[in-house]
Length: 205
Image (cartoon, rainbow, N blue to C red; front, side, top):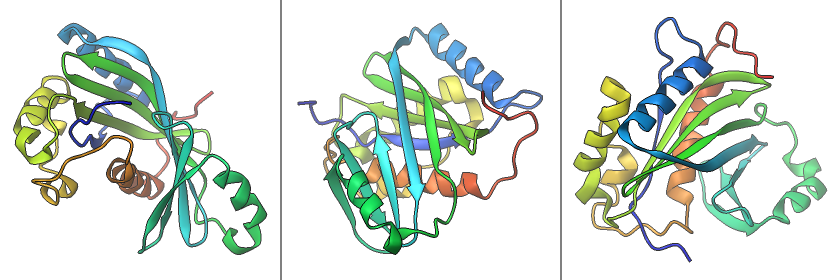
């Protein structure tokens, strides 16, 4: 079982001026590798919005899926939940939007785990996500300044201020197997991406 680590921070990174989504992602990869980060496989997070709830998956927890009810509770279930949703499609049809996913590379740099993903919807690249986890601390509020300094080394001025989910758990411990806080950050990011216009030349093949 994976040891406890700090709450990952998920943010959307703007596309570099004059660059495409893919070119910006490659630029981020290059900056991480120049720092000495090592690529460790790939990852994906997806979200299928349906009436009343969002069903999400994370490659870090391949045997589970997460259902977030709009304005209400959430539940973690095994992979068979997707089969159940098909049987209940008469109650959960009328999807609010198409499936959104973030897919990309995982990097390890000392005690940091970084995931850089291309966010796509309907085969179109809509943006870039970056997830950063500091694996040497279990108290989110204690390590934000260190995480921010590290993110500035490859994101520059694109690093946002302290996320609300961090400040709500200043003394709390984060357990990676309970990924609700991480997935809720991805859900917020995906919701913003759905409202964006399609970027020129953003077709993903």
